Amino acid sequence: MLIGLGIVASIFAARVLWDWYVFRRSGYRVYGQGRDHLVYEERDTAGTIVHVVFARDIGQFFGPQLAYVPSEAEWSAQVPVWAQARRREILGRLESRLGRSKVSFIETP
Image (cartoon, rainbow, N blue to C red; front, top):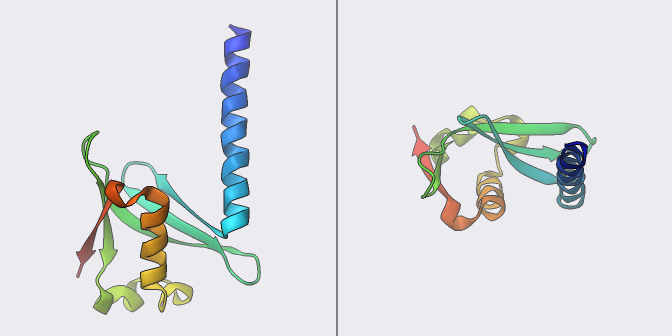
């Protein structure tokens, strides 16, 4: 029992360290927050972590998750100032990190 718990703890610790390493190397990360939110997070020039949260629908086991993003016309009004001119970059990073076949963007008005 203790060996199994140790293995699980080791896997968890390795995952946390790997996520930290990737975030440190790339400067951004993407993760799910519960079933309903997708978070894009990065460090700004001062080293502060900033983020944008998108609604999502993970749907069924098979098929892409749906990420609800503001339309181009509404982007600047709905995201923080640091993200306003970076829609294409941020959506590209979401797609890159999640996999093109695993996410579909639905524009919201």
